Image (cartoon, rainbow, N blue to C red):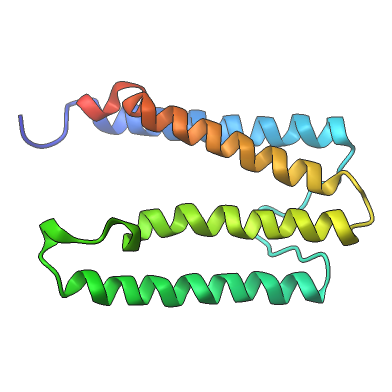
Length: 144
């Protein structure tokens, strides 16, 4: 069968809603347990200037690798692309790299010593959640 199944969009919306609710709920519960203040969702909250420089260095390195990977893979046969230059794989490296850097800076410099614990717990939860989704074929959606 080609194309999308009849309930694909409803199930995708449900899956995204469940994942987002899980992330927000986990964040709220752990934040309350660790007594950590809430930070804006889409803002770049830097602990200090050193953290800002490290974060931007990581982002620029990943952007350069992404561009190099694009030009390397675009010159190859699509069936022979190098998988570790694919954007999805590079993003799976960018997120942990920036979050581990954040946790280290929070451990060393943050006023609230529990900030780094929240960052590490969020990273672990995200990995568990997304590996569970991947290994379960997105709870059966891959078969639609």
